[in-house]
Image 1 (cartoon, rainbow, N blue to C red):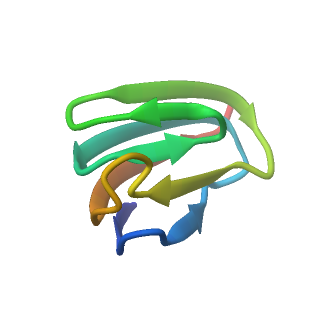
Image 2 (cartoon, rainbow, N blue to C red):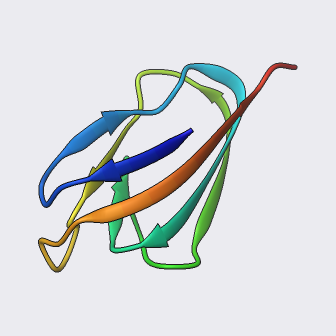
Length: 70
């Protein structure tokens, strides 16, 4: 999935056994973790997570999200 978020916008992270999130541009807050361009996160048993744009700079963000079953 490609997610393009405006400043302050949030999106749900898919509930899946395995999720990989890669930040293409901007800053993203994933749960309590701040990620910047080039950063990624591997999540197991994702449930009820959200990613939000503009964690620090209040700017738009773009992220790639892969969801995989176990």
